[in-house]
Image (cartoon, rainbow, N blue to C red; front, side, top):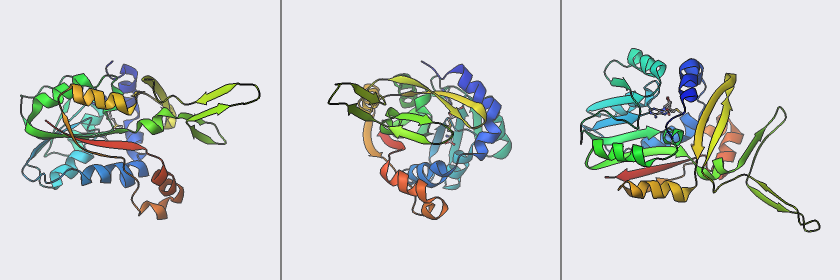
Length: 252
Ligand SMILES: C[S@@+](CC[C@H](N)C(=O)[O-])C[C@H]1O[C@@H](n2cnc3c(N)ncnc32)[C@H](O)[C@@H]1O
């Protein structure tokens, strides 16, 4: 199942607001963890998948990468990237159909994008094709433990639970959350921004990786930077305990 068409339209419609609202989970958790896993990229050729408006590409270029290219399925985000970063090549492209020559890149980077497609094998095979021998694929995605839980939100509270609750007298069982089933999640962000992405358990993520022929060389479930404690104590406290994202480093 490719990226949902309505979700692409929503990104095109809401891109300006989305760029302004990324928040601490990006700046004080996911991005620093991803950047810490880049390794030495001086002189390397790098491709960023789902690059959004290009900020990550610009940062990677500033670390000394020789060439950086970024692709995204959203026309509006790529137009924004082209406007802001003139020394980087950007393309509107679907990560399931990469139009680059075989063995072009030393490293492919992808932050919070893979969960927009259901089956990852197609993308992973495309990425392997464009990577050089021993090339690296570094990516982050939703942590299935967090997204396997039931998320309920109303005006008064937000609840995240993965619970088995049995009433011993009546025998009634209530189950909250669904970790094991691969399923579509329809989410609602600010300003009625409707996005659809996929949840699947760790075992199926690992199965897709192994099927594509990649070797797993690192995996982390990052926590927040300590500097976030002063900005938002509850963000820092919550995500020291709850796994929001997972990062994998793979080798061809
Ligand atoms: C959560 S955003 C992440 C953007 C950026 N990497 C960041 O972390 O700021 C997900 C991005 O993936 C893009 N995307 C979703 N499906 C895609 C696909 N099949 N091919 C390329 N880009 C895709 C979206 O347009 C969006 O820009």
